[in-house]
Image (tube, rainbow, N blue to C red; front, side, top):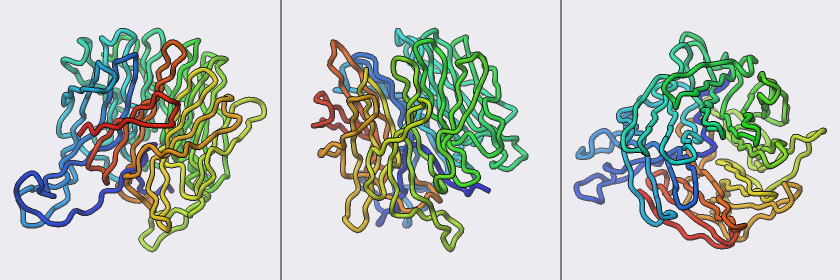
Length: 422
């Protein structure tokens, strides 16, 4: 049975604050941010994320951790990330309870920027907020009222059809009965139809989506049984077909994954291989120290490439592609060396080999040694190419979850300009 864990290709540890008082420096008044998602189109950058009050009573003599009060936030920049405006889309979201948690790839924008879509989970109910007036107003609808869910990701194809991949289980059933479902909307998010893409029990976790040049959908997702693995689903044949990318690779392998589809429509996936977990005294999974990040290409047979084999790396993986270049951001934590970084790697040969940048994106990333409890370390990477010049963008959570940052590189990841958004 899968343990109670919180997944997002993104992790943030909720660290206890010390001291309470009044004023702007009141530790009890801090907010927590997680699960940022991003879409880039020219100078227009669209971001969604979750925010919550860290404590229930900001004036109390002791800091009491809040378990509710998640807000879904939408933020947009029309000048390449120099200035931002934000809007609260939904307030008072119920936090996930006894489930795997919030996901990241949950914003989609049509080609003109007039329609904005944000998928989200309210408790265990899958919903979507949509705007048809460029984000001025949003309307929320329930996507699936028959099933509960804990992980979801959304994407839009070139014809405007929306897809949400999510793990689905009956509200009265255990989470380890979940399957991979896909919800589809062809009327700008107003109504949705659902189908099962993979009916294997205890699958569909941490889905990542990509669309190809023919508007078909490709999905990678975590399959914890029997000993960890990453699976793949696609509708290129007109119906959903599935296969294993890599299995029996150690418990929690594939827990974090990100899929890209280059020209030619061959799916590539980067994913976290933790090298196994051990069970702690409290029943939680404790990470071994030899986690790495790997890259798989779905050519027959499937080939695997090591992106970064440094121990304790690969969480919060997020990938994007431009031509034959593949860009990846991911977390790295080494307690012995006191390293706590968001790293960047690049391939210029379609994933046959990768170079890890000597320049980290940031070094103020929340750490974790366990996947039990609230563990978010969020990163979402996107690349936009104009006149053969690729600009890489990353939105991520830092400072133990109390800050949301935006980074941009115009030189292939050699240097980064950074901005704190909240």
